[in-house]
Image (tube, rainbow, N blue to C red; front, side):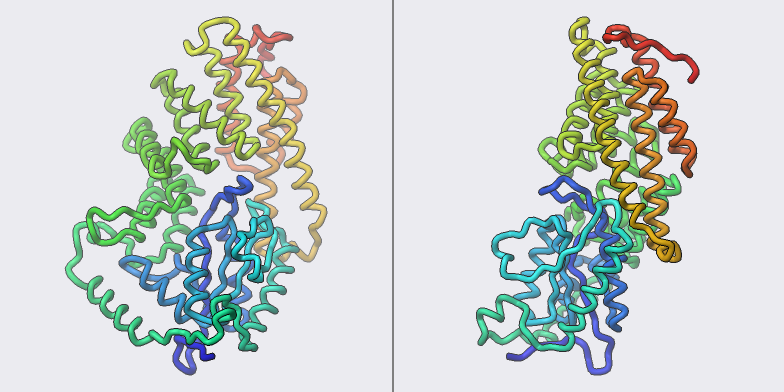
Length: 478
């Protein structure tokens, strides 16, 4: 049985990585996984250490559709590593194509909570542990060693790893390099022709998707939302054909980041920005999706509409969305915001009777009590992680980034605990949690966001907090 190699003799071998990019939701568990960290920390360093060029689809430079270069990589790459984390349908499809085209040099990996589909039970999938927001230093070291050994074995031994060529052992792999090159030249000629109106507007088409995402994330982190909006708009356009009527790629991560940058930009004005952001989310089937990030963003937008005085119906929408996000993820952010919007409804015409107001206040406080439990669990997870840290890790740049992430997470655990305690009338506990949050390293906007929400909550509870038993009373300046 023969194999094919797309590289000419003497050329550097190439590894193509099949996986999603950005933050993706694992619908089986409701967790959000940062797949860029999986690629940057676990895969790319190992591949490059073995002397191979490592590339993912978002790093390919192209001016037109991604399909042609992607198929070319699946045929010609010396090695393909397929990460099936979050059960990404594109990754499954591309793995199937690779198995059909090449009998060997394909490695399959995933994070360890992937529910194995029945048809993949006979395929060896190497697992790693992903924490969602990051990957532990020790796990990075462990998995790099494991993947390095597997990669070396794949390079050294000519053993079929494709089930297609294992079971159909007389099948001959295709040798289509010449046809592929013709197709590439044809596509280049097409891309070099007079640009259409849509292509003319695509100023960043010579950039890779990865570069646009990196610049967009940096802009959002620096609160340069107008810049971030333009960069993520360009990222989405990269996946669009020259046809004016073609639909741009609907990658949820790109749309989520564009939505965030859009409504945070407040351009051309806050209300228009919010409307534009909500319209973008409609592309992700907002009315029916169970994607936690989609419903959480929509909940935040509807909450903003209400706070800007656009009508009580927006608080109803926000409650429904934060409820969905809270039940899906059981997390602090959705829980604390659900409690807040329930207090908003208690003070609105949507709860006209005393009984309805009391019901909203009680539901809000039940959500806050749940948030306190989640805070305890999240805090214990952070402490366990820190206990495994060693002095040797402090010299590692990736580890230091993870430590900074842990510090930010601890700030929000304290901040969410403080807000929950304030709403429950537990003012001594509120002060302890608030002071602990302020003692941690933080950015100014984090404190501003926390103080703004607590002050809004105070104004709501001053009106109807006396209906609770015991009554909520304004603590004044604390």
